[in-house]
Picture 1 (cartoon, rainbow, N blue to C red):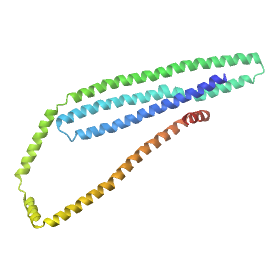
Picture 2 (cartoon, one colour; picture 1 turned 135 degrees about the vertical axis):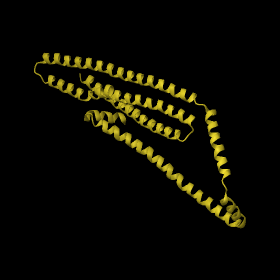
Picture 3 (cartoon, rainbow, N blue to C red; picture 1 turned 90 degrees about the horizontal axis):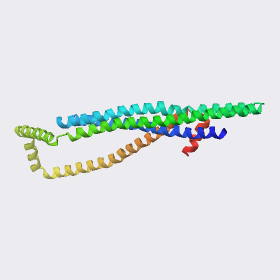
Picture 4 (tube, rainbow, N blue to C red; picture 1 turned 30 degrees about the horizontal axis):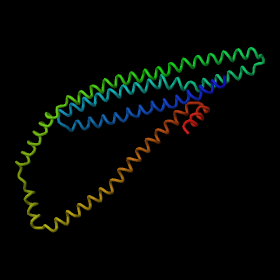
Length: 264
């Protein structure tokens, strides 16, 4: 009896912890793809109609996948994580029930009761394991089937994109812009040319100073950008650890100790 309850508490607790982490990772992936979609849409608004249409259709398909991913996360939480978390208090109650029976004066009656308790617990455990993992696989199959359909549509949008048509539109814009610039009188350029002739030494010195200043700014900026990038990665890792601790606070102290041993 004791070994059966202890094994259930240990391994189902580990299943709960690992599948909860898996579910959180999927939720974070959903958030990251949402940010990617936003950037794609913003970029599309700066492009010509042909590419803009292609990218917006592509982004819409990615967005649909994230809707299915959200449904996947919610189903995993309800049909997989919650049933596993229930085994924390369940194993405690079965252990207490067994201890009460052991304290009984009637040995024959106690043995019979303990046998009923362990058989009932074992049957429930078998049914729950079958249902939990069946739900897990079914949820994943539904998500990936829908995702495959959306990814197929996304690829079709990219394949339908006409680069030549977009390039022609770009060329026409460039030609019109050049014609407008050529038609405008350029007084400032003639003034600048005169100053170049009259003060060549001064212009060269100023150009050197500007290059040095620009290079200095680049050298100062790069470490700050990299440092910010690493800080972002560290904050994400700290956030993951905090979320795991918060989730484990929902289970019993015995389970938490078991989970802590597994993590070590």
